[in-house]
Length: 158
Image 1: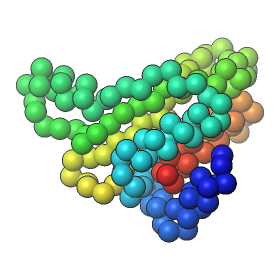
Image 2 (image 1 turned 60 degrees about the vertical axis):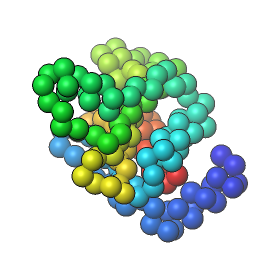
Image 3 (image 1 turned 180 degrees about the horizontal axis):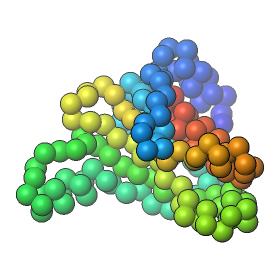
């Protein structure tokens, strides 16, 4: 990460750009920011790429849900904007699958960025949370949990 980018993130943190972290029901970590959606999305992409990770896909979930909602007879928007980023770490995927072959279900990793129609000025970043028992018992899953948290925190600090 460049010195300028680190400085900007530091200023953002000091200036209260990160509004907080909340863990939602069902094992999801949700982070909030008062930064613009496009900035948080760009911050997420940069945070992933700066760690040498490969972005597999960017899915426009907001558009898809709006389109399918109309097909289902509802036009109530769920999101103002919503995109999910799929990415991979060959190293972490191999480590966690070596520890437990069933953990392949965690690949690819996904972090979403979204805004809600009724909450102008707030951008959310969310990812599945790794269960505490897995974090405590598995070095690989602890690394995955740390990576998801660090990337999400970097995105909301953008």
